[in-house]
Structure formats: C-alpha cells, structure tokens
Amino acid sequence: MAVTFLQQLINGLAISTVYVLIGLGVSLVFGLTRMINFAHGQFVVLGAFIAYSLVRSGLSFWLAVPLAALAVAALAYVMDRAILRGSIDQPVNGFIVSMGAVIVLQTLTVLTWSAEAFRVQSPLTGAWNVGGVIVTEERALLLAATAALVAGLYVLLNRTDLGRSMRAVAENRTAAALMGINVSRTISAGFVLSAVLASVAGSLLGAIFPFSAYWGTAFLIKGLAVALMGGLGNIPGALVAGVVLGLTETFASSYGVTLPGGIKLGAEWRDGFAFVLMVAILLWRPEGLFSRSRTA
Image (cartoon, rainbow, N blue to C red; front, side, top):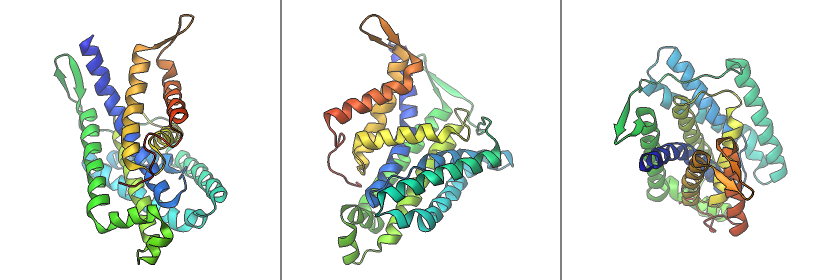
C-alpha cells in the first residue's frame, strides 16, 4: 500500500510540473495584460513538435529543447506585437483574436506535421527502483527542470530590474508608465517568458507521452484551471494550484471515488475530478486560493 501511494505521488508530481509551467504562463500574461491568451496551449504543442523535428534531424535532445523554446518564444513575441497587443484594453476583441490564433496555429501544425501522434526521442531511457517505487529518468528530468525554471522565475521577478518592472506593470500599467517603465517592452517580455515555460513543458512531456496537434486544447484548459484556482495573475497561487490539481487527478483516478449508491468513478473520470476540484475551490473562494493578484 505504501509503495503504491509513493508511486502515485511521484506520478502526480510529474504531471503537476506540467500544470505548474502552463498555469504560470497563463497567470504571468494575465497579470501584465488582464487578458487570457487562449493560444497558450498551442505553444505547448509547438514546443513538442519543434523539439521532435530537431531531434529527428539529428540534433541532440539537450539542444533541441532550448532551441524549440527559443523558436516558440520568437513566435509569441511576434503574436504579441502584431496581433494581440491591440486588444489588451478590449477584452471581447482579445478573446476573438486569441481564439482565432488558436485555430490558425492548430491548422498550421496539422498541415506541417499531420494529425498523428508523435513522441520526442529522449536519450533518457533508464529508471531507478527505490524501495519498489519506480522513478524514470524522464520524469526526474521533468521535475528538476520545473524546479529550476520556477526558481529562475522567482529570482527574475524579485531580484532583477525586469522583474520589478513586471510587478509594477501588473499593479498599474498607467502608474508604471509614468514612472518611466517601458510598458510595451515589459509586456512583450512576459509573453516571451510564458512561451518558454509552455515550450519546455511540451518538449519534456512529449518525451514521456505521445502528443498530437490537438493536444494543446486539453492543456490550455488545465492551465486555465490552475490560473483560476490560484487566482488569475497570481504566480505563487498558480504554483500551489498546479501541484494540488496534478496530485488530485492522479490519486482520484488511481484509487477511484465512490459516490452514494455504490457508483465508482475511476481513471476515465480523470478530467472530471480536476473540474470538480476547480469548481469547489471557486465556490469556496471565488477569487482563487490567493486573493491578491500579484506576479511574485
């Protein structure tokens, strides 16, 4: 029983890291713009596909992941400046433009790579057996990479001029501009950072599970759930909510939930458990687990 619990804990933490990275990206952009970038899920997919193509072309996996992140970051920058920026103060227009970007990116992905499922070839094929608990090298890399990215994001937001600018813009764009902060450049930096987080999540998860062009929608929904549960625009909240969501999904789908009348819900209700948790948290605290919107 203890071994099974610990195994599910490891599995839950692994999927939690993906939710954390995606949720952090959603919250970061919302904190700066008060707009949800619905194309964020496609950044996850593109990160996986670009890494897949680079590895297939003969490039090292260790180079493919950061290069894919750079490519997706460049795309995010162009999208921000050319498409999304004009809709920041117009929520309805922003929603329409963002959804249009999702359709365009998804279609281009299918045309480029097809709708079939792929997997990023990783050099990590081993695993450790720790008292009966199996920890694969790929999952260990995912956990380590997420910890490094979260730590790096914390340092950037709290110890650098760019981070202080982001926090000021998140609090009040007008006041930040009056203080001499380049608001436009700061928002672009936020889009780029969010894309890097999404791309790395996609590349590393794509080395563990098969992915397709339609993969992004599911992870966008999970990212939104994390951002909402943690409090939109709240970075610490997204971190906590991502871990809670991933562990809840894993344990509930593994052990099942028995309803009155003997009805048992198993692994097929995995996504359902996540949304029940989200609704319960939002009913309890409509503003999310952390009420104050903040970027650090």
